[in-house]
Amino acid sequence: REEVEIRNQADTLAYTAEVYNRLALTAVAKNDGRAAYENEAKAISYNPYIDVYQRNLAQIAMGVAVNLSSRPQVSDADKQSIQSLIQESIRRVRVASEIIDPLGVSNWETRAQVYQGLIGVASNAEQWTVDSYAQAIRLDPTNPNLRILLGGVYYSMGSFDLAANTFAQAINLKPDIANAHYNLAQAFIKLNQKANALSQYDVVLNLIGVSSPDYPRAKQERDALSRQVQSEAAAPTNPSTGSIPSTSSGQEKLQVPTPTTNLKKSNVTPPAINLGNPKEASPAAGQ
Image (tube, rainbow, N blue to C red; front, side, top):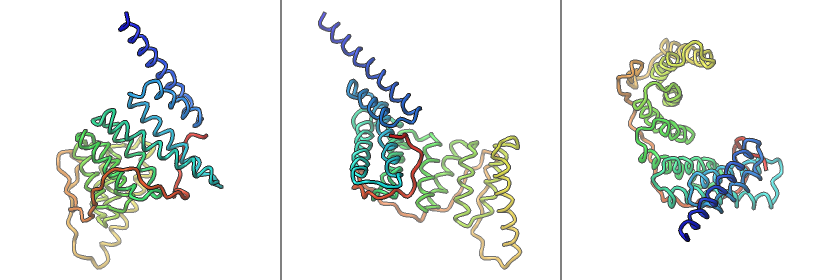
């Protein structure tokens, strides 16, 4: 009888936690950050062993922090709240990824996203973002989307050679992702490999088709780049940087330059927050 009562209590706690989690998600949909935060915190208080709840609270806390930091006037009280919310967000993703389920890919992906939100605000946030995405990739090595996300981080860091290699890895895993080809084209442009970028644009246009709303813009960008290449070809040329075979057939392996950007590994620890105005604020739940 005692065991039955314990199971019933556990079921009640789990059910109550899920109710609060649902209320939090409803509040997020309504752009009510305060209600979302409070309800998700209550869900965790009833059942702290669900990594989804921990991830949700981490994302909600970061969203509210970004929203506060984007105000025209940020008071000292706001700064204290922002710092507390950021620390809470980091703590929750660490609980999810280090304690509850270290093998959970989503936990490491969310951790990377939390650190990515601190780039430009916290020192070493870029490296912690890279480390977290790298761990997610180790756990799910055939997932091309994780590599696209990591490539985007490298691109934003100005490490275009690393970005190109990472986008190419995503393409090798799944050649029909138009976004990966498009991103690789952008990296090639930054690397001054315009002919290779044109090849990637051709793949993009073939994949999305003329009926796609993105087709006109991609075609316009491709044509502008083609004119630039033709103009440069008519002028005195520099030694060739080599070419990279197209993957339009979906069979050939991409070859990209050997990365020259060196990144040092570091321990993933909570960053020291240097609170100022973030360089950019994404839409977040209101408080």
